[in-house]
Length: 180
Image (tube, rainbow, N blue to C red; front, side, top):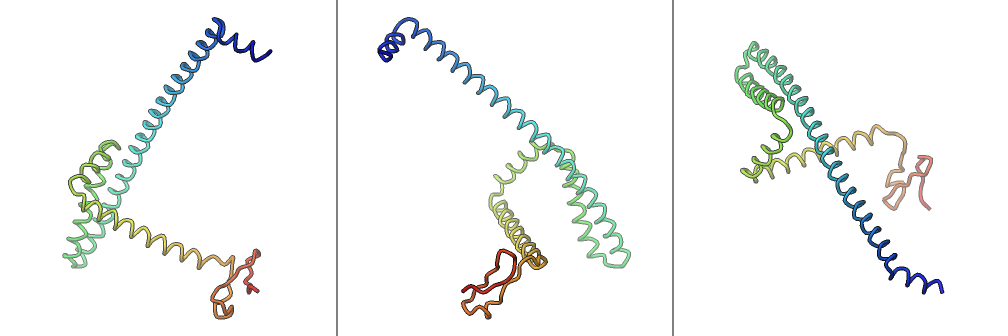
């Protein structure tokens, strides 16, 4: 009898009103959620732009400071009589100074636009630079990892020659052992 009553109520005018109310409420909730997501996205974008601006300004001032230090090294080279080396160091300092000034005076959106424009004009140079940066980063990480594992003495291993099977085993306590 409960099922029959439910069917009659939902098919009647009262059931139709409830359905419409629920549909309107669901639509309102969906619209509110959608607007909240747009607001959150805008706030996150603004926060990211602000952080990008401050980071680029900070990096620019560090580059400018580094350029000053390189210039002083150049003047010392010149005093020592190494004019060729001093000229090369001056060129590096000039480039660092220009890059630092550019980064200090440009906002994050302009930096991104300029980087995209450069990548579109010189795709092969961009790909080569990305590959070089990746290679250098991987070598640095590998060297750092090797140095870190050498300096960490929390686990010792049994040499392969002592095991006979070419592998070493470390027990839970960090002590070397031979697998049976």
